Length: 552
Image 1: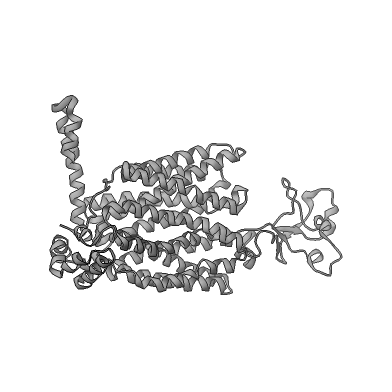
Image 2: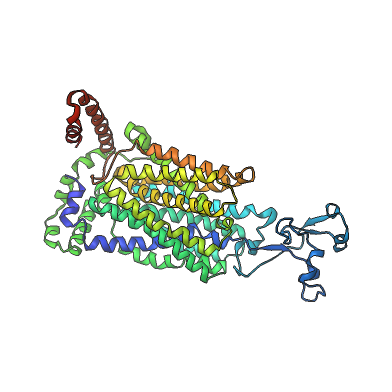
């Protein structure tokens, strides 16, 4: 007996699960908005040096005289963005190489036709300060990394609900402060806090939804969770199209979390976590409340603290001490699961954000491209969900990563002039990465045991955030050769896809509650391999049927 038997008594897939999942997943819509926000809030508009003689209202010069002050780019024949002539008279020199230029000492003037304001125009993050735009995004991802590592352990110790409520409030307040405080430093600080809150929301949302869901409903929950991120990308494209000022855009995607903070008090704490942490009376109340909502009041009233403890006795006997993240590496089975999942999460996030965080380089309408990049996730995650149900988690995870890696490797060697072919392969690769994310969330939650599930999800989430932090740095290698970034993304995806093959299948199996459960599953897999090898010489042509019976 286990917790899943208790869920079946009170209803493991009923009205409560629908309401609970809806309350938890609605805030996820705006999570993708925060991740991809800087595609719009930090967009770089066309710009040039501020020329007092032209740009002052009292000037007798006009735009037709611009060539007297700013050199033209050799390819585009447009004014250069980061330099100007020292004096306009030098324009009349016949030899352009002798013209003396200087940086934009008086600032810049920006094209406001697409965005009325961004952090780039607000703090002049162009030319020598251009890298600060990427620094801001890296600081946000550093916050996500910190949250993934710290909040996973805290929620294992203090509960999923407490950390989730605090994370909602932190996201709301920090996002508001980032929008309206006046300096770039304070913007980065509060964006970092938004990143920490992001991890707290994501980790505890998936845990609370899965731990209240029967095994047969977990695939649907994992898919809905992934689709919430997808719709969040589409919502961002619409919000950014309507709000072109970065401050109000930042506020618009943060303010809803004040409402989510108030609603989150209605979400019950995980009964599984409560029992394991010695709070069986509260767990009993929660289970009886769920039974009433699911129309099983009589079954819920028959439950008692003694019944709960009898169902969870084996798990309680094994939880004699506080667990730490080090337990993820102490035993052979846990070590294999953790290392393989770390590779999967790092590579998925590494390639996903490398493709999705620099939309301006594709040279098409940024709002349309955000919509396209979000839309491709819809069929990709649907295919991933179907494969998870009918083929299994392991095959789906491995195949999505390997296919993405192959697409990105092919993209690396296609000439730059074939823009459409490169764009199609990039979109296909992003779709495969979206399918990989869809599978990774639910697969990881099913592989880690309850006693350290949040710690495990925090560690793999940390690796994902490391991937998202490293991805922009890899893009800098395109200055050496445009082959490097997609090739590196592709190789990483193929390696992690191969690592996923060594994980155990979890489809339609009970969630492991203890480390011992994981070790038993790992040993069972090894035993099945031994049985298969030993029986081959004895059964000849009929052996596949006997192998199936033995391994089941």
